[in-house]
Image (cartoon, rainbow, N blue to C red):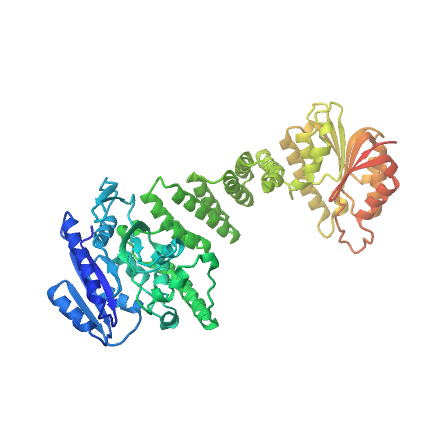
Length: 617
């Protein structure tokens, strides 16, 4: 609980105003003493004399002699208002700090109101409001439902000021502020750089920016201080502006002044960044943590992609307010974004953990955002070669958002990869993209009792396994595979390579549980093809030759083997043969076939593979 407060009063050459100011502060302290209940609270006034050359020093000295709780700090020359306030704060002992310029006034209820709000602990005190006794009539004041670091009140001004400008003034001057000492010390007080602040006088604006970035502020719309206009003071110089609608106000600012404000903005940005870094390193009490402006700080860390700094801050926030949906959503977003960051760095395991932590928080994200978190997990698990687990999250993403483009594109690929793992297939390479069009155009053959397929160049059996799993479902369906792999061996030992591929084929086909449907024939493709019965196959997959002449010969022989209505799949359309002896690429052979046979075929698909339907003999 708070046990003391200090009022900082910087003054310079205010002999006609300072006594009235100090008396208003003293009246507010007396009112506090009358209204406060509970343990005693020590009050203090700290007057900072900024090298006054008039009667101001004598007046404040005389006041302090009759008010022992008034302390005076003398400066021998003018520095700046911000520096003076910092000097006073450093000399003060109070748990709370008030500020009042030497020509402004406190209303008597100001100190008590601010102290009551800042001293309220909603975790131990169930009260939600209190009655403030005022000369204008008693007023009910709502107590904050959480700990706060700063109170700001409304400001009385005798001049007519437009509401827009009145609020702007109230949100920038220090007279109506009461702040916890640890909050003031964390932001390191008012900025003191002579340039630009001596020329712009904007140290109050910068201070407000700093405290609002880091601490919870409660604004009470009750006028408890008076901002007085004197000839020549800052208020007086801007009176015309304050009485002009903001949409009609056009301020002519010299280029030198614009440059100074740019410097100020840069100082503000640098100091906020410095404070964010400082916060990460410092020891923090529970009381200090309770008054933080969690949301604003989290925004700042997140906007700078400092997710690892944001997460412990958010976890502390959520631990203190476990039902705070905003904290939950911020933390989930931080975990998700950190997951994406570490995934980019290649740490897939850690990325998965962060994504899953985001989901475990059960954030109240939009459906599309939840879908994207599931999608992130799916892609990370896929990259970790865990397609079965990845498929679960991808399907969840599509349940949440059926129109999620990335999920739609990936679902068939991931289903295929998960299927490979479930079956235990071991393929040299996996080509999930190739089978999307097969599924589309071959579905008419699914479970056909007399279906017969032919594959030239069966390699490790990937295509055959797909057909057995998806098309050749009827017990009577049959597949003939011609093993021509020896024709493609270049600088490797032919017999060893051939043996390895053959073993892979046999092992993979066995895992389909449909080995009886497959007949494998080894040999030169053109010889084996000529031994087969014409018009007997529903499907032919030409997947062997990279030499254009050999490929064209195989296609022409296969033409006679396919039934009308059957489909020929021509692989290697996009392949560039690397042998030095190959001068004509496989694409040329396929294009020649399509050109000559165009009256008798219908091209179904032409990209990496070409799928054609035989429409006539």
